[in-house]
Length: 456
Image (spheres, one colour):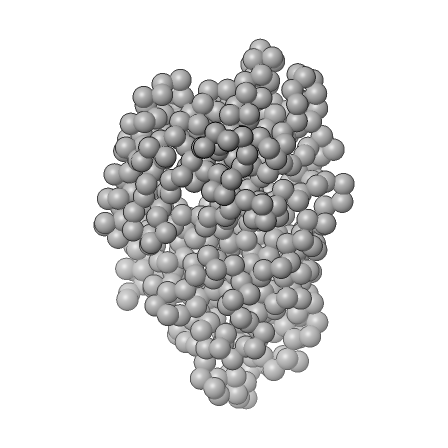
């Protein structure tokens, strides 16, 4: 497939991309049994202490909160391999813009993160290094030890193109000082979404609108409204990735609850201008829902002693007053460690990725509070990483609730973007007082997703 065509395909599903150093000429395929020997046989190559043909690897990521911890893990690998690793942070939008430019003929980083929005197109177009044979020869990697949804996300055509870096869950963040000021009881793990609505309403009305009881950015689906759709019994994307039930009675019930919350929260015009995190940290919003990947931002904030976490509320769909199976979901997602298919030393890049995803690397990632692991069994270490702040709600979300993998299809961004526009949910989100708008939006969303999947 031509590079021009690849670029056009990626442009249709990616809102941004990334560039770095370390590309070489020609596509490197997965190795034969003698590939490492062949790689190191070149007499004019500078061979590292670990037997690699490169002395440096460039990594690009988009989250500055993770940079220091990941660099510490990479440095451990460098100490044994003799290959220096440099981790560069590029903001989310520019990351994908630059990566797309690299995929269409420019330079790319050696190693980088993959995301569920874009992975399928990158895998299908030979942009990522095929890791299949490396994994088969690596006794330390067992797919059964990783979170299934994350592992499967980075598989295509029977080949594996990334190893799971992490997984994440969602929890409710609240400001104790705001609750105290307006005499509202703190959230608990027994809260329903109706309890959250009543508390948010009390704070918004008690402050005369000076403080919003909650803030939700409707553009952030994974840490927001997706969870309510599943709590009420529907699915944004069905398990077979061939449809949706968002237009069902259950889907409409979940989105009706979203609508109610928006009536007592920050208007979307305010959220668009300021952002939910800024509203929260400035004391203008009492509650937000947020992902585990953002803990460090609040842990290091000026007023962090006022902040606390609880599990997401649940939907008491059978009205029995207790949280039953299927009534409290948390979305989970996971990034993948991938490498450039054109990288100069694929074995070195794979070995670095393997170390990041090893038990040793994953435990250190959790212990340093970088993220929860893509490897099962290391999340308890993450819970203990933030002294003075109880973040166990993120771990209990999967131990005491249910998880669903962040919805995706082959071209996720096509329908995701359409849901946020006119004809999708935009009118309902901007005018939450009108319940009829939300019901119509759910019907529209059903058609948008069904049509997008049919066109894939």
